[in-house]
Image (cartoon, rainbow, N blue to C red; front, top):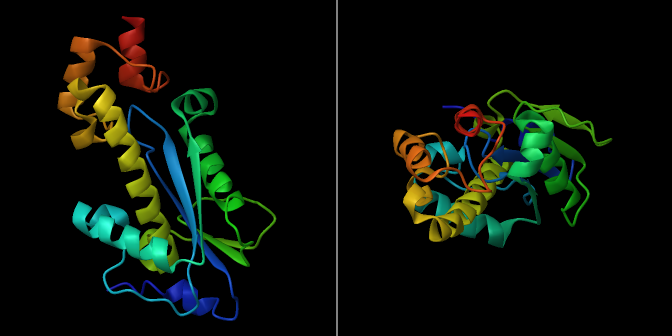
Length: 200
């Protein structure tokens, strides 16, 4: 078992440890969403880990708990047009910076999941950080649930793409729907299946 408080213990002398993470790099549609979270010192909740390893029910549960317990939460959203303009890596970085700037408390240190931000605040970039830092885990849950809610709204507008199930990822069903119905304004035009559709 990984110690998911390893980095919180490492920086236990600091008051405001910020974990930041993003979701939505892989989908063909919609924004990339990041969250920055500052938890109380010595915070622990059993079972909280990387959002990708949690069921929807568990994510929704932890989302509510984190919303209640966190000292500060910031959200950063970068839409598909900006993703097409600057590429998904830079869009992910921008979303994370936006999330941190939207915090009500300035962090003493930023912990990221292997993404360098260079914001003039001390930071540590951790490989598999969403498994090793409970603060990054919390950020991944907030970001994931926030983006999923956005995709549910998009599903209401375009039910034929079944975004409520695929969240915009390039599943076989999503690709078939693109072939049948074409693309929508929320699709990422720089991503290959969409670009191929436009070119054809």
